[in-house]
Length: 134
Image (tube, rainbow, N blue to C red):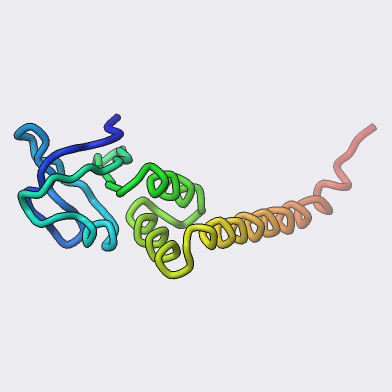
């Protein structure tokens, strides 16, 4: 797996940067605020990388720090949040409210998910109650 890339900015796309590392251009997908923080083409950059492997694609996601990459990993555990949304959601929450708010918001998602799961499990219990055999 690729964990970090250090090289020169070759070009930019809508949601990615091409980072030239020793003559090899890596397409690295980034959140908008990460792209804005990178230098102009020809400038040096270092990105923490999360390698995302699927059946039909391999994508590299770039972050300005290991801390941001950990947020990406944490957001991946929230049901319904995919790899494409995680950088945008994490970046927006962090920019709007700060990193501490991210813990609060994600904690709230976790508690809500747990409450829904407990409620679902409780609906199954009455159906199973009459099946005990001694």
